[in-house]
Length: 416
Image 1 (cartoon, one colour):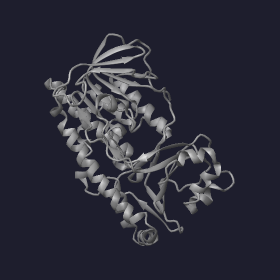
Image 2 (cartoon, rainbow, N blue to C red; image 1 turned 30 degrees about the vertical axis):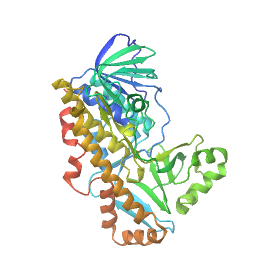
Image 3 (cartoon, helix red, strand yellow; image 1 turned 90 degrees about the horizontal axis):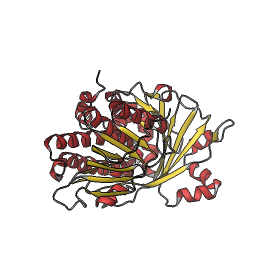
Image 4 (tube, one colour; image 1 turned 180 degrees about the vertical axis):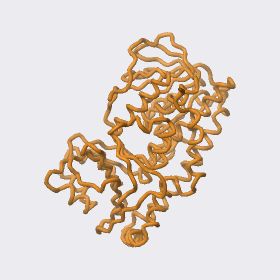
């Protein structure tokens, strides 16, 4: 399922918004703005489908956001609905905890990317993959400017002018660096490996989370017999060591004894070509400036323990698109204050998430506490379900769902 591609040149085009980056945040931002009647151009330097380290998991809030976008049926047979998660301790204790509300999804990232890009194109956005941005000029020049102006975006297909620029080009965002939004909080997070495994037996309808000292590993199984296995650990250079020495990968997976034993069973195979990503944990102090907004990993890159990566990308896209649409309507797109609602949401959301992740680390990933905690969850599964709700944004009930901006998505569903 290949995403749309438009072969026409770009020289001389003038649009409302240029979105740089075609991942979930960028494509959802383009989709929402196009449905709002804006002239949108989306560019991504790489062709799709592309390999992308990802947990391939949406928690129930993220799955609900996808449904509100009108894309709940767009993934076809690629997605596996999830009722809950199996949580496993190093000692082999486990609990199959149902989600407190809703269903999650296991879905390969390439299928999710293709569905979102196709929806953006169908809504009217011009989508060009394999087209890099080679230079940026104009706008506010740098974010210190009091007001922005027209952005001039250079590409191999010609120069485009835009009233607003959206950086959705990942945690090493070139847009952020080019426009002066490069200042970020400390990158002290863990590192992740994204593996594809064939033949791994899993409990139907459940993802998995394996806990260890200062490490964890997620498992998401797909309907076609493949599964995503994503160990997340502290050491730097993890990816380089594993690529040089296959035995290092076995040592990484041995941190999770129950999963390691299953991976060594006959008929189970780890596909070559695994990828590393990290450090997982930073945020931009300023996710917006005059005429420019950062979304997704370009704005903040969170530790995936909560399983909120794609969910936060979609929620951020909603908030950013709302602010951009209002700014364009009022002719205030060059004023930094026009994006203040998005900036406030971003700072509040990620500040709370940072505190919460620290608390989870202190309880769930410490040797003296892992076994007692999982034992308590096994004895009282409702506690485990409550934990899943907490890390997935459901704990506060409707208010937590409202904070993702899901209510506004209903107004941006496909028009008949």
